[in-house]
Image (cartoon, rainbow, N blue to C red):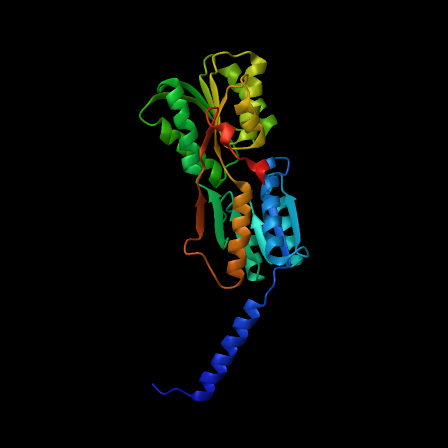
Length: 313
């Protein structure tokens, strides 16, 4: 094979220039699109992204966090705005992992690095999320232990996103082979306290005997417990959940609460990792695995005293 010195030099020069341009690219702007800023979980994601971005690029880095309130059209519009404003990294908690795919591809075509957090999203460069299946297993395993492997359990469900689906699947995995009977699992509490209270109130009316509740996140679990207390239902022995939120931490510390376990997520760490990995992708360094799973330890009344929760950030 004959090599042409001039062509080789031109190619080497082009590669060097491209490498210098890539290395010199600063982090100037970050867009963070989450589902609900009324939930402290998503506030922690916004803070984690902002802290990590400013650690990399200094105080001049522009970080904007927006909330879609679980509405796909709203989130698409917000991402369109981020594209128009030429952010460098987009951190997205997808309201609809598939419905959001076209606008995420548009963002990538515009040179924006797209990082999915908390739930997967089609066309993201990479995803940082909790091990949601294991979170469901960890919480619901405590239900099995507490009930001695038998009883009636309610699953307070949530929006049909990957994280929620995986948590419910993990919960059912923990119940497999036991005499646990799931009496309700199809009510969407929207991941909120009000939704959890409303859904649980209706379920309590429909079922005379309920031994335990698994809710897909802490706000809906807190709402479910409020409904149980309001109804005066002494048959409900425990509430289990996923998040590790401050309200759940307080409930676990309370002697008057039936809140028994939460599989703790770390939204702050999730967001900081998204920015760090996203910045690496900006400079041609892609992770070996595009999906990074973060462990979710079970926090109970027995170990909550040693738990360093979201407030520690």
